Length: 376
Image (cartoon, rainbow, N blue to C red; front, side, top):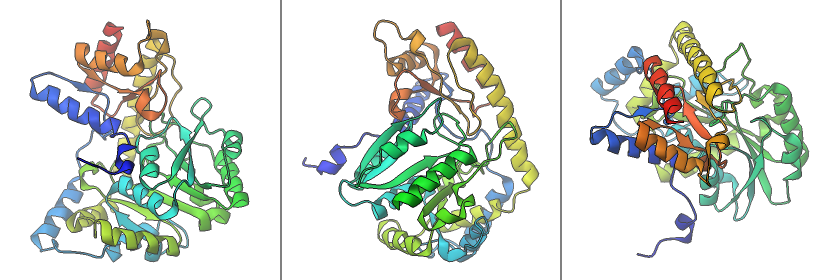
């Protein structure tokens, strides 16, 4: 079977692979402690379920506008000073948002700068758009703005920022974002800000957004999602906020690619926006407690930088990789022999590390770390 060169150049998602593998092992009767998949351990809020069911019951099951329900876009625009619904498009989760962004901005061999380690889909989506990912290493998981500036070439189209970060949990301070904004302005580059974990920030740290910098907004493309922040991963609702001309271009692409996001899921998203802030704060506080526990346990076993957001640790496991063992093999042995699933750093562009998700029940978290310690 002859396939396109483009599809042959990409790697399947490493995190999705682990989801399938865990399901396969569980179907065989294995008790697998899942510290691999990044999914909130909370039930989807009742009012979201009720609104979705009500939409189904009242016949909201037909096509809706390809760019999203006007009432949902209008509500989302309120998060962005000076924006209205013309600055918003609703898409099938952050993943499709980002795919569309690269399709719209990249010509063949255009470059997009990504800090490493990175979320698994960033480089593959850039390749699918005909572009070239340019990887710049971080320093203790924080941005190195000087290295980023040195990586810029005449082919550079954009710099991508993901804060809070997957896989490291790093939260980038406002001064680093301001430095990036200055670079982008001077070089006339797009800034893409992936803020999928924006509600999960700890230690009383303020989650700075590039949108706070007014001078960069004409070059800024922001993506956010309902998946992590509202425990709605299966709903597949994300959105882009950007200048109107850019939103129109993405809407044209989406009209040919998927059309509208599931109509009744969008009604559920509307209900999520009316959630009591105290409930969201309860989730955030619970995840901070789990972060504290997981970080303390990880320090007993590995070198680890303390995360300030999201729900991941990204420890360095090189001390345990004897005889040429890779972190991928390390994770494979841990899963096969101990029934604990973690994600190897190779899929994030940084071998010698593993990603541990602490988005689990306290009981499973404690059991998982106990088994990791026994395995070591």
